[in-house]
Length: 419
Image (tube, rainbow, N blue to C red; front, top):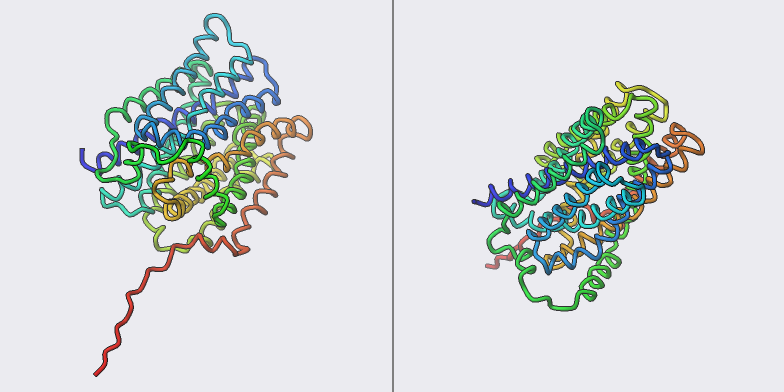
């Protein structure tokens, strides 16, 4: 396979794997509700689904560098598929108590971030070999994640509504198995890719030293400190919306799982279009101002509509607007990360950045469950939209946020001609 075909194969693996994750986020809350669970139980399940990502990121990145990037991608999808398949098997045979559901959800997410970090490390080498600009390749990679939401959310909603959450989890396991097979058969590092070659080389230091080195890099870099803080808070608020508040709002106001799938799918489809379109203009627009405007729009409309108690047509329109804006966010951050992170440290730093960004997500779903029971779903949405808007304006303060802009091209020195 040539470089372009390998790049397409990598993107296909990302789509299929992330589609499995999206269907899981739709099926698990309704599996809890089908057991007679409360809003708090939904929040606890969301906590169990996201906290392993925080643990797997920092410890999995250095492990990925030793195991190999393709093998890590395959292994992470196999683990997710087997653990999710165990849920319906237990439910249909000996029974699935709540603690067992939580344990399986926990294990299924433990290797998600290391697997995605491995695919992300392979991306720049394949893009370079294929002659694709870095920002466009990152845009396509992020678009593949958005496409998985477009496919997975409506599919998950329809499956849950038509066959039940356990049948939807069977389909999720099949998706993860397919992603593992595709990666094993079709994905290969680019020829001469230094980043991929580090996985086959003998480690230069110990496992814990590698993790410590990556941690020191993240802490000392002034830009990444700000990014982790910003994305940690916004991801916490996004988790409150997507894993707890939106399923509850869909069940109470929008009509159930199918409506939830359509709303989430609309957001994902719009974000997919935004990522693809932005990939072709990303290298021509200022990064920081574009990032702030799109970040505010990515949260505001889709949070304000449920805060006002509006129905499904308004939710779909708001999700489309927010999704288009959200499509520009990760391509910008992804390009900056690849520019600033040393090649040999990418896997472990991606894992650490991902873990730091995801650290608030487990609490987001859990706190949203408590808040929804205490003050109501609409009031909680109102508080979230205010916090989200204030936080996403932070890059306008300047300082280290200016490092987001692409470096100015170096000019060759002008020789003085003497006569």
